[in-house]
Length: 328
Image (tube, rainbow, N blue to C red; front, side, top):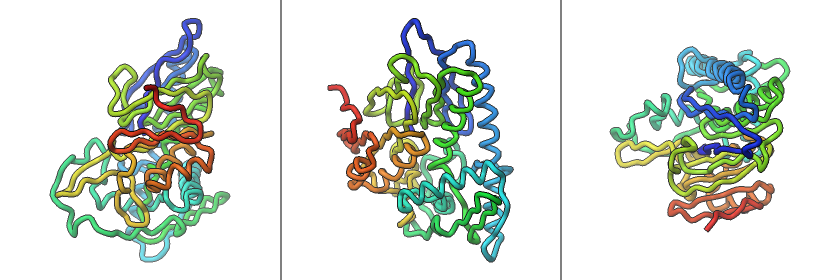
């Protein structure tokens, strides 16, 4: 999830930019009305605070962690009523699982923890001893084991399950925040949460220019790995990467995108996959699924009409469905 918004618009159309770190990721915000930047930041901060308290896998007092704690103590399927925000976040995750035939699965949280990603990634040791039992096949409950009534918000999960919403929640949250800010402030808005980027409102002349790269960074910093700049006018853009969140246990190099069928990190066929879609949530879902699908990804993305850029480990770039070729 690795974009950096660049300066956008002409001299007659200035934009205002701010960035800060929160929730273990880089937050970037751009508005087309510089006078609204502070108000936009306040609105986005409110949204992020609520998101963290509800959906974080890493804070002890979050609703998601409380759900996981209860599920670990359960000896039979657990049914609870969840908050409106968590219900929406889980619904988005289940929809992503459905449209990707299970490639993007929210029930991988327990396996991620077992592999060492059990805290905010900035606190995960880069190296460590071999995992007990090694890195082998681990059973994932599977998204079909989760039942959610969207009306009553009654959620049923199997005992022991730990949900992880990381593959969908940031893109979805970026969509919500960008739309809310644009509506309240009446200006064009770009919201990037850890590189998952959503835009709303009237864009600058020429669209929102975004640098696509391996690791999320500030626009004034050199890019990491192969990069390119594209422009979007609406919707969202997301990148999934096997290089950004990596750690080592014994002789095993791991990353955070798991193949739910094996419980192992997806084979590094692509170092990054970037996708543009009607929403950031859709873009992030497709990019993550493409990493897991490996060599089948280009044809799958093309069949969906989703512009995408796929980068092989050696830096070779493949583009599909109208994504512009990298400049020579």
